[in-house]
Image 1 (cartoon, rainbow, N blue to C red):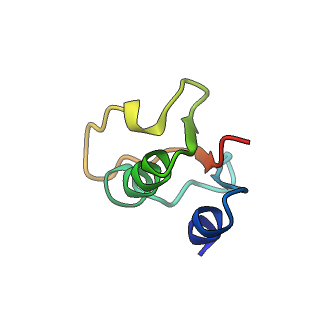
Image 2: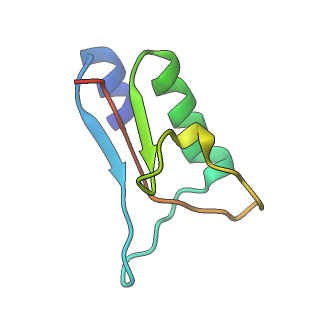
Length: 74
């Protein structure tokens, strides 16, 4: 729903952050990559681990999880 609101309204941010006590839950191959692709195609921005685009992340396995933020360019 959060990403849908970003796409419809044209602004906002969605983040999936983790810590030592709270693990990240979205898998890179199915949830994170799909959301990142939709947002970047629509003209938004994505970032993961402070290294740039979510789509540049190299997936090495089925259970790879990662922290990321996606949103509008503003």
